[in-house]
Length: 226
Image 1 (cartoon, rainbow, N blue to C red):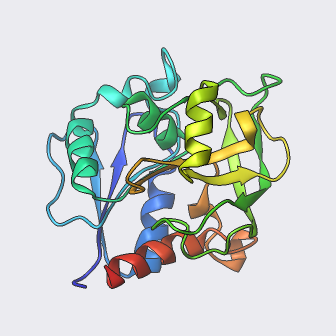
Image 2: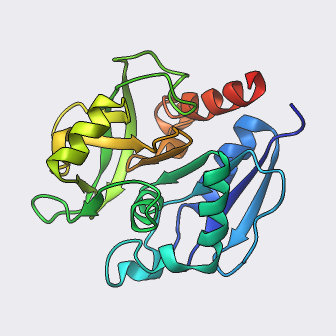
């Protein structure tokens, strides 16, 4: 493939956008465009769009609710419809649900406590662009840092996600009260992933581990072979 090109979107209150950009740039060796939420258009020829963690608009109203109405989101929704891979991490996951790109909602953590620590995840499937770098059932360690990471959906939606293999990651033990311990979900076409844990914070041994690196490497491998 030609040189890898990605976009990392920054909203007012984002605080993991640089972490995400550095991780993608280091692993891909490609170009990472920094996109402001008020931009109306995305750069052309993108291989990946990433919505980072943080507290967009101070989590006013609901986490991600205002960011989901930012001008750039129309372009992101259109790109996702064309099949462009979109990754939303933490607040980015919240934005994706609020924008209707993923089902369900992220609620206040059980216990009403901010959770910030490394957690164990189980890889539920490796048939998606984002999970193909792992083995099904593999246990990985990735950090979390959130106050509203309690994933909830109605039982019919949860059953559908399970039946369609759209649960990408599951917490290996209770973390925030998420229904069925779900930590990450995929869109129907599999090109949109939302997850609360931060893979960009676990890409080299100096971070305490490199389990998050395989997510980005899997995306690169999948795009090369596509």
